[in-house]
Image (cartoon, rainbow, N blue to C red):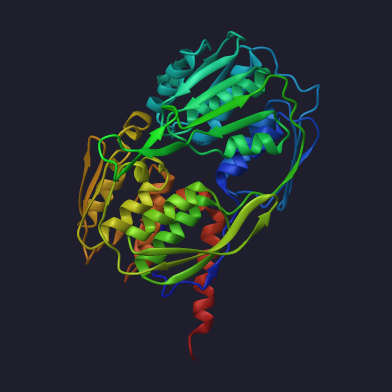
Amino acid sequence: MIETIKPLRRLPPKIKIGGDYTWTQIALILAGLATGPSRITGFNRGRDTFRTLDLLDEMGCRVTRDAVEIVIENGDDAELPECPEFNYDGGVLPLVLIIGVLIGKNRECTLIYSDAINPDLVDRIVHEVNGYGLDIFHLADTRRLIIRHSTELPLEVTCHSIVPYIKQCLLMVGLGGNRTVRLKEMTATDDTLERLIERFGGRISSEEIKGRWDQDPDDPRKKILVRQAEHKREINLDKGNCLKGIDFEPPGDYGSFLAITELAGLKRGPVKILGMLRDNRLMQLSRVMKTLNIDLDLEKRHLHDGLPVADVTVTGRRLKGRKISGDMATGLTAEWPYIAVMLAYGDGNSLIRDIGELYAWAREPFGEMIRYLETMGVKAGALGDGLIIEGEREIEFERLGPFDNRDVALAFYMTALAAPAKTEFEGFEIIRDNFPDLVDSIRDSYDRQLLSRPG
């Protein structure tokens, strides 16, 4: 599918985006484990939501849905059929959660996953979980996961990854199999799953391991940060969890928020994005954006369905090239496609370091970004632990796509909206299917601008 993208003449003053992908996916799958009905409104309308619902239905959950509400109930009579074979065509996050549930059920079954998912990533997950006494076998050529009987001992694991997949999988093993899980994270990763487990009534606790400032023994004029332990966070999931159904509405979609932030940077204007979650990730992103000359101002702070949210006014100015490394870099993963495109339009060269572990979790994670940046005349290259980008003031292109990665596709869709002329976008369905609410909001902006023209 080729879509002609017309330039967006000006940013809308404010925009409301749909429900968050991560919160929606996790809530759906936890609802499938809970006793009693769960009602989810304001959910993410991307295709993965409905693929996950189809799988939950296949696994014996009672699922009803309409345009505004999803109801999921898993009664005590919901049992997996003998040696079943399941198919899941959705993304990596729900796949990881589903794998954990199926391992926890401790029933032999087969799970076939989408050819859009990198089998190297699945290999990494399988290798990691097998090391903790679980039993899962991967047939990469046919995209099959064979899940077999595993030990039911408590899981005590130290997670070294900067992405949360292993942690999420193991916590779902604990929930699906009613076992204790003790985790230590060397890098604190996204905690949405932990927060939603607690919301569903699960017995889970987490603690940030903070350092303290002590006198530098070599220089009495200075202080040094002394860590109490090497790891950053401890997570404890107790045995005997009994999740209860809830009513829930997720906050605004973070991927769409990143895209609009990028668009504000490219068009150097303000836009207000409604209902975004106020968490550590947003604060870290705000610090990074400040270095690029983009301000994120939080307004109307309030609680929405028990979660701290705010309206965020994003103000873009002339973008700057920057060096991003250390703790500022390692806490970010999904953000890099959007940041990389902004750096391509920035004054001067940019260097991103200390994100090398992303290479272990995806095949050539920056290859698609670099390929299309170079198509647009931007010099960019991958390093052993990051990216280097030479910023350009004048970038020209007439055609983009197709893309394999939905976040990379969305980042380049924003460049098409900010371009001075029309762009042919090949494979636009990857945007339409994954970010339908954002596409609708952009189209509404076109309509309002047409109506506002004189004459």
